[in-house]
Length: 91
Image (cartoon, rainbow, N blue to C red; front, side):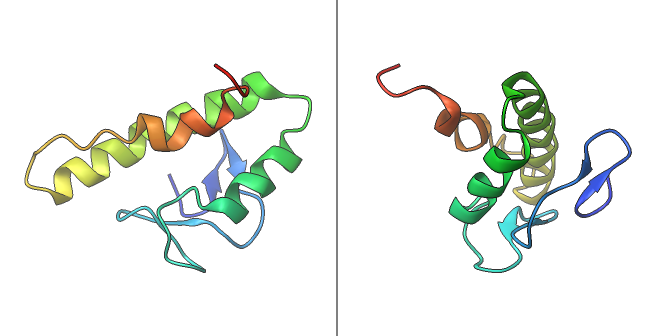
């Protein structure tokens, strides 16, 4: 996948895109998706929750692979970081 997106996901919205393979925000250096990236994703995928979930699941798998390789094979699972913020309040 190219930085910012590919033919399947399209470009990620906004300036707060991930710096691969370390998966930090290019702008604020917070773990991606940072707060601004989350807001941009919610706006872009307004009304398409399944599409947003599919995108984030795919990016989460990519990030897990990258970060695991960077940590000498110790599995780094970022599923919660990528998806937990989409849960409705109280769930």
